Image (cartoon, rainbow, N blue to C red; front, side, top):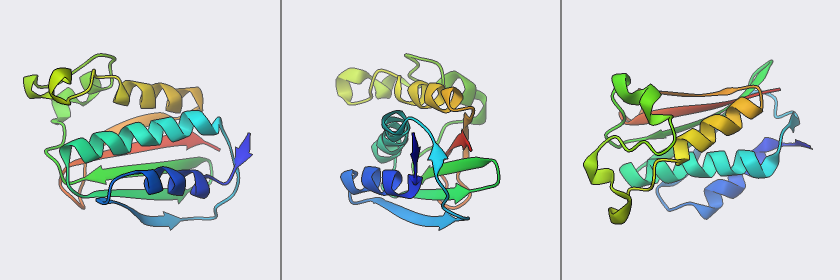
Length: 143
């Protein structure tokens, strides 16, 4: 299905908490072939994780020549570089305080987002947010 992804991401942000804002859209917003429910779920998972660990969450869209990039950044503690690959594996919780019985989730959000990106010819990349200091997650979808 081809959709203009701007509406999809704005819809996900509208359902999120007050600390989440659309920080910018760059490039020509052309239609992107995707499974919209799957991509919405991936973005929801990234935003939910960012809200859980940070107070401020920024979402950015970039329409580039061959990809669409949805970036979610937060001001939380982030994930140490040595643990980022591990964090993308299913059922991985990096710290004991992220116990699912205390609101920490079961460790599927990032792995689901990564699988959705991969199924769209893209990837999920984790790094440190230069803007906010916490985690930066780049969901890349091929165009």
